[in-house]
Length: 130
Image 1 (cartoon, rainbow, N blue to C red):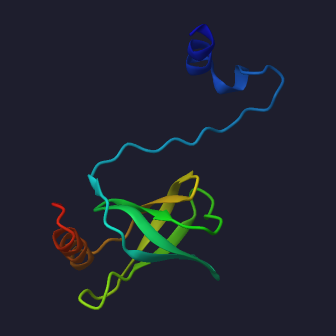
Image 2: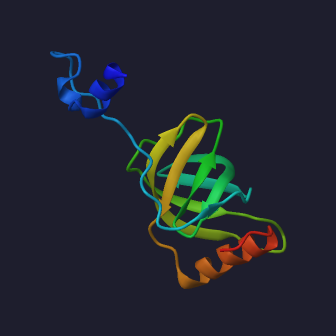
C-alpha cells in the first residue's frame, strides 16, 4: 500500500531519481455521455488515414478502435463516420486526446449543429438516448 501511495503522490520527475520524467496520459474528464454505437469511421491527418469502428460515440467525441497504429496525442484529424445507407456520412474535425491499446480517443472540435443532429439520430437508431 505504501508503494501505491508513493506512486500516486510523488511528482513524476522525482520517481526513479535521475531518470527522465515520464509523461502520463490520462483519459480526460467527459462532458457528454458516450454510447456503444458501432459505426465505421476513418480519421485522417495529412496523407495518412486510420480506419476502424467506434467503440463508443458521444456528442463530444469517440473512441476509434483500430488495428493500425493510432496517431499521436494532440494530432488534429478529420473524422468521417459512415453509419449505413440510411444515414449520410458525417465528416467533422477533431483532435486525438488519448491513446489506449487498440485505439485512440478523439474529441470533436468542429461539430456543426447538423452533424450533432445526425449523431443523435444514430443514438436513436441504435436504441441509445443522447
